[in-house]
Length: 296
Image 1: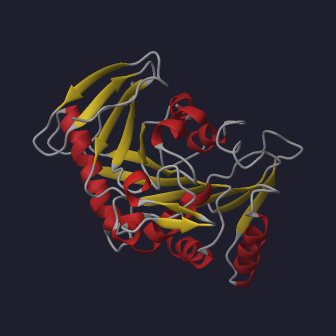
Image 2: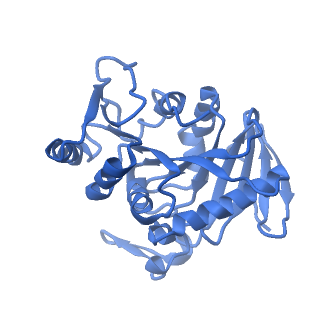
């Protein structure tokens, strides 16, 4: 039986469901419903981390850091019935886990404040580890299989035969960039992915992001900081896009805390915020959701 930790969510109460296909827990929040499940298609466990991971002088073993297949799915209370659903899939960075991500960065309040009819999905990546690995989701068509499982859980919870997806937005902070790049390359849902949000996470894989920009014509938002380690790689990508004649826009909120956010194309957004502030200190997650023309 799965146990969902509610200590960080004091206004919630807990119910357990068992389903023929996937078991999931249900936590009622003031903003909506939080489902917690474990999926076989989640990033971990994964063969590439079967022996754990070494970083610096430390070893991060498989049992502690790479066995958690948890996935959180948040459904706003105002979600309207539809023949298809929009999903924001968020990937966390180093040293994190699902509970800390949801609570530290206020993802749920920011989504609900936007009023968008979207479902938030947060899979567990490397658990409390300095690691950007996407595990199984780096493999061809793995993201498509993962989202199929997510849709199955959604359908079971809502009492529907199916819960097909319409649009997907990929969101990631810091080390979440790597798995996102592989999903864009070979995840199997090219037509559905309409936007990519990077919160101070452009550390590499530039060619994968550039390729997606060239072929998708979707919205790409790269928020970068002066000290988060993404400044130079962001300049490199902008230089490459200029050389390839791919248009982009640049905004800067170091002096203006409320710049107008373009609704399409490539957008490079410089901020004076710190690396761990970019998701929530100025409610950037809310602002991107609010300005998305792909969310209803």
